[in-house]
Length: 393
Ligand SMILES: *Cc1c(COP(=O)(O)O)cnc(C)c1O
Image (cartoon, rainbow, N blue to C red):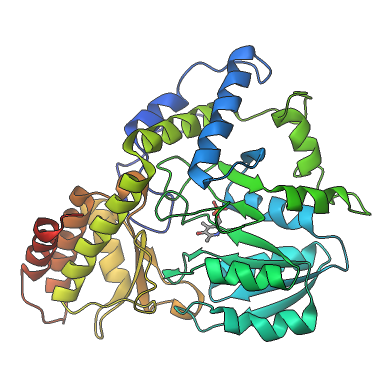
């Protein structure tokens, strides 16, 4: 059987991920494959680790990329820290907190979920009582809840978690590269991310970092880590000086991440965060001008994931199908409690740029104009451009 030639349609990826890939990153993927113990590749791994430490703002030696998507990073973090019977508190205010709780339960942990309504964030006060009562080994929290667009502050949370003697485990899959993530300054013990959100890179690797406290905890385990593939102690022998074969590194994906990190550090981390914020402000101004508002709590809205309420009377599917089929633009629909109620518009990595914002707003205006929805034609574009013009940051 001969399947047709591979000719993927050209898309503008403005959903919750994967996001637009930087052309230099796509190019890097196609470079010649070397062996996973080739001196050239070992040097690439060292440089990757250095660039990841700079991205995470950490000195942690155990900073590397797990082979697998963001969920593999989540799984690696959870199964290494927790032994069967250990207690974990997971903060759940959207899909990904729920997933973390599921992963921990499967690892045999006793999980206590603390919940906030979708679109809201946690305050330290939300945790104090449960930490006192449960005395968990680990507290897990999602920094950028991609299902709701809520941006969770971590510094004060970190304080109460450590005061209670627990380790702090953070999901930075969507936040890393788009907003400040300060692993050392905020005393995050374990953090994981993914390549496919704000790093302008295809899905396939999960950057992670473990601090010494986390490594000591893993060292003190009584039972083996249930996952051979994700066992950090085994992975450490490959990423560390010994270079002991564990599994075959995904060479070409490592090239892609390498180039993606070069692109980010060339722009500068602060400049990269500022670009995400600037494009978010323009998108938000444009949407506000046609009466569309955000689902997440004011003051806690993520720049890279704009979850907005679908206006009354507007057909969700028609708009998203129209965007995809007529304009090549992908956005995300709502998940779980937000299904049919919100659109999720991503401005991630290479996708966070004026061309995408203006294209999306123009296309949206055309599609809304065909529906039973009243707004001032052209207002979204005008407001977005006014935002760019007046934005000196
Ligand atoms: C996307 C995402 C994940 C899962 O990453 P995959 O690459 O889909 O495995 C986990 N957490 C958050 C917050 C995410 O946005």
